[in-house]
Image (cartoon, rainbow, N blue to C red; front, side):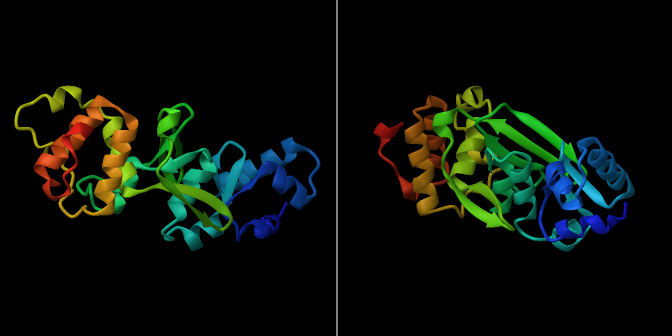
Length: 224
């Protein structure tokens, strides 16, 4: 069959086997799957995950969009929000290494690798699954953590307990986090996430930041 069957999907971020079957008037799923597999091998399609595809044309036209990777992450695992290194890099909190697309999910931790890159989804307990905004990209809803919540998630998922016991430790310097320009609402929000979590390790990290980086944004010591 001709690749003209893909034209209806060239203006949208993704489509499924079922959607292709209906558009191409193909009754058998196996026939549609075989055809799509051939087009993936020929370079006309990109397989995002099992049964989900993006046309090469959409990719070539939109891959430099600011929200492109974010939308792909949400397509792969809708029950997730972008966070951790991906968001911290966006705000120049981490600058020394290029990281894959990283996200938080209430589901099991997993890593998805496709021709567009590597997508990491880290599990976080359900009561900490908050602190993000939702945006739209060609009909795809994707969620992204605020700077403060991305920093919280980053620290929460790191084994910091032993590190935090070191005398005179500057945690931001130890982790090479550029926090000097983070101020105002972002700092207050970070402290709020820490207090809400009730996690001792996070309280110790917040107190360390308060002493070494955010002296101006003092929070009552009773919080820690």
